[in-house]
Length: 621
Image (cartoon, rainbow, N blue to C red):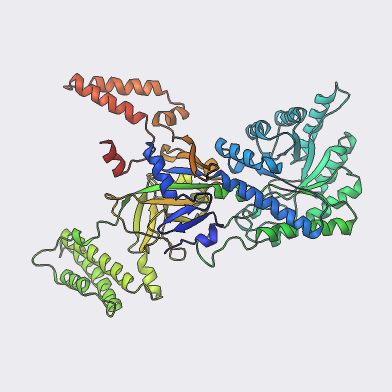
């Protein structure tokens, strides 16, 4: 059975039964069963499945790990957390997040005015809201309005000018009241400590956000002069997303902890929290030795709590509350993208595709003899002979000595020989065989847009766990390259010998074959682009009732063609009118023919951009 590295990235969220992958929860339904149930409702193309119970699981694990660490070290401060909305602002995710997080007083973080509106309208009163990023007077005013609503808001200062705006807005909102009410204030510090990996630039003196030590002292003095020092509540830092190693965080914690202690000693008596930002990594790797997170969640929590306690005790200051903003860890696992295979582009290389003649060129005939007599004993020898013949025959074609049919037979036979030799020698470790796999890789055309659904692969080469939903009792033998349906050569996930993906050989004209892309719940949806005007796939939330049965809820179909054009501010009514006019004036067409064309046109305009499988077309016909 092929597990596709499930034990590395799966976190026991899924399990394999017989030949399909199942959700490891409640009645343990298979992803194939759920996919087929949705398709039977008429929804075609790629699907994005959300699993709210996995959001709850991640939140629980995060809070439980820090509570365990606090108990182990007798830590006196509280643990609090917020979810950064930039990771996933889609409404069905946010609604599920708020519902699952209610018992933990888990809040939201906003980095823009629109995100702040989401936070103000979705966060329960009392749960924390942190506001980061560059802010203008209007955004800061919204924070003051939210505070007056009863929200627990902390506004993070990113620069000195921003602090002055906060002071001005405070004076405006409180000039006519005897009971001033302002949000808490945080100060983001620009640490000397750097990050690690792709996002290392989030830390260090060259980072985009944060106050230097000089600016920190200036901000302190301004708050003191404005009688707002009692609002200073939080120190904030962030050294980057997807931290593979915990060592840079430990260095940053020491630096931030000492800054916290120095400010407390200076007179910032209300200062009581350190926000360590995000960065808690998710394990995406499917292959042993390629792990991206080199620490456990409990180790992460223990190190944070221990270091904060150590610094507070050595400096003689109260132990601060600890805040985190780990969004990727919370969101990634909750979503699975599922897309059907439309075509295998190497299927023409079959024995049935040969066009052998009564008299073939000698080298072509030799290739055929090598293929039919190939055995494990002579596999490597015959393989070398076939590769030599391949080069010779291509040269003969260029010189005009063999024709196109001979060249076609050459390509097919060499492909079949390589494939057969690799199969016969599959139990042997051999570098040459690995190189040859790249020559015979199957190209799987998948009904999705990589730019829309996996933008981090295109932009950052971030790999995601990939596996078929079924046939898992059969060993996959095809080295696989995945092509999306955009007309862009970057729309592919190529086969890599160091991180190989093998899939099954299938006949898509007879059966459907679904590919699952896992851990796609963080960033992918909000960063996805409408390249070629492919839009967000059809989505559904999979919940479970008290009996453990799964329910398909919140089904949202992918946008229709007209909806996509409307988003781009095309006049869709004019487009429809123009197309209708052109059909109505087709020369020599009868009224019945025009009516049928119009009916088909209106049907197609209501469909989404994704392609329909052969099975779907057959069902409709």
